[in-house]
Length: 49
Image (cartoon, rainbow, N blue to C red):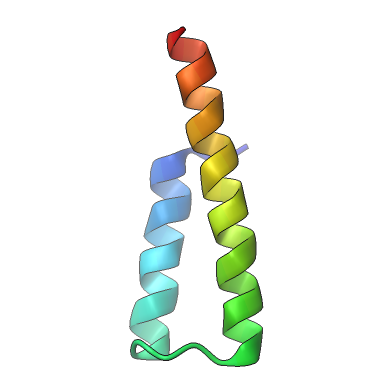
């Protein structure tokens, strides 16, 4: 699993490539990345506990 920072960087790159307006395909990619990012954050919180 990638770190939250890695996924966040990919999200930022997607928005830059898209110029602030996502196509339907980019929207799907964005949604998958957000789910992956959230899982990475949860994993990090569990480790800290």
